Amino acid sequence: MNQPNLPTPPMQSTPQPESNEAQQPSPMQSQPHPQTQSQTQTQASAPTPSSSVVDTNVSLAHVITAITSAASPLQLNQQLKSFAPKEVRNMILASLLPDGRDPLSLLDIQADTLGILHILAARLHTTGAPIVPLEFVAQFCQMFVPEQARYVPDRVTLLANAIPLLAESAGNLSLAIQPLFDLLTRYVPTLSHLTTIHPIFLKMCVSTRHFSAALPVLAHPVTTIDTSTSDLHYNDNLVYHYAGGMVFAALKRWAEAQEFFEICACSPGSAAAAIQMEALKKLVLVQLIHDGKTTPPPKYIHPSLPRLLKGTPYSAFVNAYPDNRAQLRSIVDSELIFATEKTLGLALQALERAPRWSIRKLTSTYLTLHLSDIAQAVGIENVNEVRALIVDMIASSEIAAQLSADGTVSFFDPPVQFEKADVDRVLAHAQEQAALLASLEREMARSKEYLTKALKGKEEAAWGIDDDPADRLAASIWAEDSGFL
Image 1: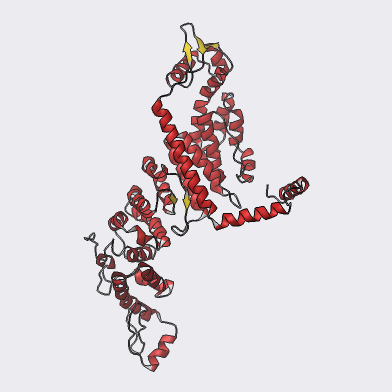
Image 2: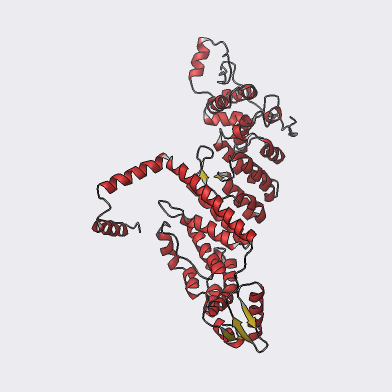
């Protein structure tokens, strides 16, 4: 298979060892060189810098040979991870061959995916290493073999982290989006698996404002966390859903934005993260835009987050919404926190929709109202502005009403309209979700952690630990005093 043309960097200058210093054989070599007794004693001592450099040039050829002749990816991976100490190993993998050739030009992307990943991870994160062309990385992301790549999830993460840096060096961050998308969609066993690539890809989409590019990934809800497939951390889940909420909010897809911000803000953890507080602030603003009110957070949210939110301008904004429009405007104008935390856009959109929510509240109380009464109720002085607003809400089916020539607005309940195709679509979606839930429950029932916790719960119940209300009250008081609530 043809490889992309790699520019050959100039040959690196290599200091030569002193004449009385023996060269160490590479662990990748099949047969060691004959040694004298004095040479053996020299190798037992710590290697000098000059001998390490010579060892680098000699060993890299054997590394390439091992990669191209490996019979088992598992065996090759063990060799590449252990043939030298980490610092020396990275220096070897990040270097050129003694004749100045780039080892990547000798390897085939599909046949040698595992070896190329080791080389890329070392070269892209070693200071002073030869530059890897972004074009080669992009082609690798399009053609690599996922089964080989899954042996080294940590190297895949290093590659994903380096792609934005390569794009930045090229002067265009958006160049990172397609390689990251290819890497993500080819690497995962299914698109419902969360990986370390997900938050990196979503952050690139948000920072470059290519929001639509993230939709094919966001369309698949995360249902599987597999740390053997990707070296995930707790923060990866938070960043992915926070960035997903930013994407949906930018596209004004408020229901999905609300879902993603809630997952980020309410993910259980031993301590609340700063990004969860930011997600909670955006969540309440999105709820005001989409629903006209906020909803209580789930019980499993970290208790410190709602308490911290109460003392902020966000809480004052929520309490005044939607009827007190003058106070809402005063809060937005006087508080710099919205601009500082980059939530001013959401706050202004919520402020703009406040009269609509006030009018919708009126429809549940009155059958008829004059435009002047509506203007007074929603805090708009210009009756013509209210007329235009009512007409727009009727046209967009936000309210069911009729506007007469004399300015009287008659409200009525909207007729229920649906078609068979709509019902079939909803039923199919419900069946799909039910099957997914059943599959997740079966997977959970096989989980060692779940079975251990369930068994422990049954044992505690058998001993009556949770049966005494006084004990529960005492435990609650102790936790509250200890600062856990």
